[in-house]
Length: 504
Ligand code: ADP
Image 1 (cartoon, rainbow, N blue to C red):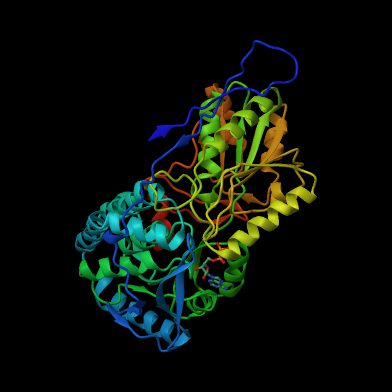
Image 2 (spheres, rainbow, N blue to C red; image 1 turned 120 degrees about the vertical axis):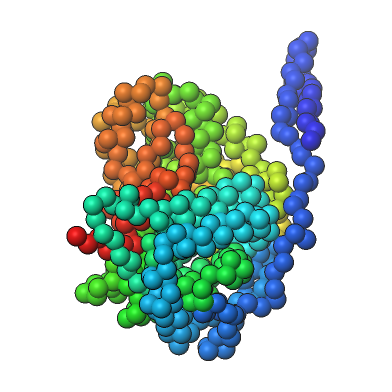
């Protein structure tokens, strides 16, 4: 690691002056530190994981999954048709009736612990594959996604034989077969969020990863095989929206757990209306991050950067709206711009990279569309001056000032590294603005005053409110939204409830 500190003599202005102005280029230039791909094995082709074995798709179709960092093909994966979904649901039903629901809870727990331990053992490989398939920086997948996924399995393994303490004086029974559909932003972690509580409560699973990031779910299928989970307890089907719809509409499914767009969430709600299927939906977000004038500003700026730029803004709870108190707005915006200049955008496998690749060409087009909408709406755009790699899908960290509350960039989910900044004067004003959103997944408050934190967190209509931090997760704490951000909670004790029937 070496710093470039260049002293630059300012150009002679014509007038004689003895002053030499020194400009310091404070940007750090790091030697490349790429993680080696050799620790990961990716097969050329993957079939469907049904009933504990790899089965060729009845559809006979496969599709490619690519590395968004360089657009190279990584593997071909099977596309599950309705007939394949039928097979998987049948396998899950048989496993549920014959094995899983009858198994003593402490025995179920042992399997879940085993999965957790194998995820830990294979952490390096899983992190590399997550980064290759999804474009997120290796630092993120290595330090956050994979360990948190393992922790979810550990956490829910612990609950499996203690449900009577989770629901005192109530009897619980499992629901049956859970259909679980997950998005591309946290592929392994979302699979863990969904599979772990379902298994702990005695349900069996048919899970579909997103079409652009199927590989870590398929690696998880290998882990499940290695853990010797009884056949059919977890089935993993790859495919796109039609496969997801076939799972949702299958009459043998008792519960749908979905994380993804609000648009698809609404389709799912319509599809299951009038059926007996239970559902939890974790949908979009447009989180308000609020900085008060008494906040520790450097810490707040780092929190904002972490909240929207790390992980390319591909987080439903990304702090994509920044409300900053007018008296400190100039200072905060200057600090944000300075910090944005130091962010490293590029090869996601490089351990120095802060912002990796956008997950797909389609998502990059969406982000670009919103950037041009922001400019047309009259907001002032600033993007960092970093150079982007020639191949792959990348976007510079971007912020907009002079944003009106009604602007689309302040109302709609962009799902990219784009921040909309709005100023405010009073507590009441910022509460009204922050809550003026169709979403209500998360929010953040930055202030020196404990009383203000309590006052704001009570009034903000968001499922999770962070105070003087942002994007912190723990398997023991529940996560989920209000309004168009969905319903139901995942994580913690609350995450068990959507998978059980409470009787007596
Ligand atoms: P995003 O906009 O984040 O890609 P989507 O809601 O489109 O989110 O996708 C999330 C997941 O939902 C993916 O696994 C996708 O294949 C699946 N999906 C897409 N359309 C449907 C549908 N009509 N029914 C069920 N699942 C769907």
